[in-house]
Length: 345
Image 1 (cartoon, rainbow, N blue to C red):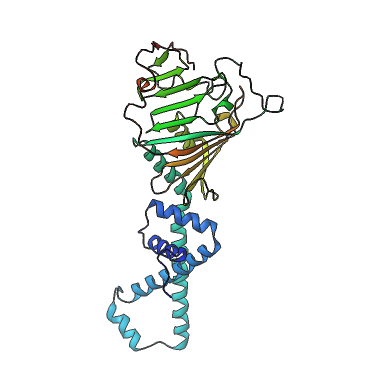
Image 2 (image 1 turned 120 degrees about the horizontal axis):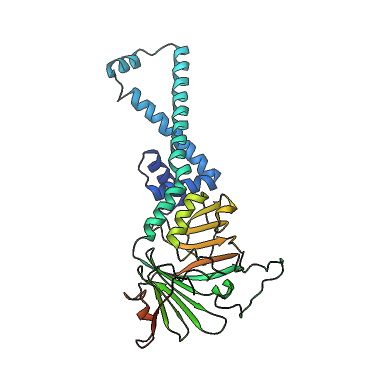
């Protein structure tokens, strides 16, 4: 019976053949590397194809592409003695084995060591495109107090509420420089922070609109204390992955809340002295390189705040053109004030 066009084994064979012939693109290479790492059956199938590929390449070189074709066909008409045949066959299989090893090594060098960095490059390139994405923030681990006890919520902490109140907040992104964060505070009011790429702004409840020419002026203090918020400065956070983290690709676990076929990129921080989350995970679509889930684990907690948060893609519907300007979030009569140079909420 002919295999279905959607048969996973047929798709894997097609992917292997494209890789062996140098036709696989970056996304296909990453997908093949992931399958080879996860499945012994996939590795066995790849080995079989690599051996056959190497053998056929050697045959082609000795035959139709031989330097002296007349001598080659004359040798076929006058077969050598049995010992020579044995030696010749042994040579063919050694050549095939050598070709297989070279093929495996080449594929490994092409796909495995560099594909994590290449995947990060593709995610960064996708982030720079002016595409709208809306995420829901989830606090996965609110953390404990400094004595190691239960998490403590302190609504009266001051102007910088605990980062646990990020749970359920919505973050809207357009490219890498425009954002709007909508957060419900413990006193019942809503705080909206944003940046149009040139001007950052903050609206708290029915108070005045505060603006700054510093795009990151209002990003401190949302997690806890005056910590910067890494998912607002997303490009900086992802660029730090290359400098301060050990990168690896992985296959995200099956999750009914996310699409199938996502690729995972994990960064483990080299040193605690560098600051930032201890571990960062990105789940992205290899076709679009759009981030579907971002996990920040082991966040610094010197001033409290959550130990782990997640961003989950909620929508890719286009937002109004002026959505990232503060005027789209308040009535025209609202007072507008320029913020001081000291960062605040």
